[in-house]
Image: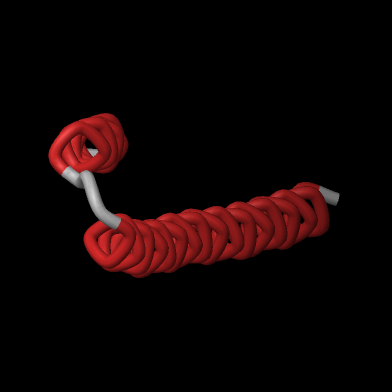
Length: 81
């Protein structure tokens, strides 16, 4: 999806620059490009944040699993003694 979005932006920029011959059009195109870039940046930031949250959740679950295994191992060792 990111590659598509980047390609879309680059294609839009290239096509817009070829089509724009006057100052007003170039100004409007630049404004549109800035808005699109801002939206893409926000999308990427959200995606990165979701990935980081997922990693944190997995890390917490792994730590809990390790603690459970340790407590079971300690209980088994005490029962055998």
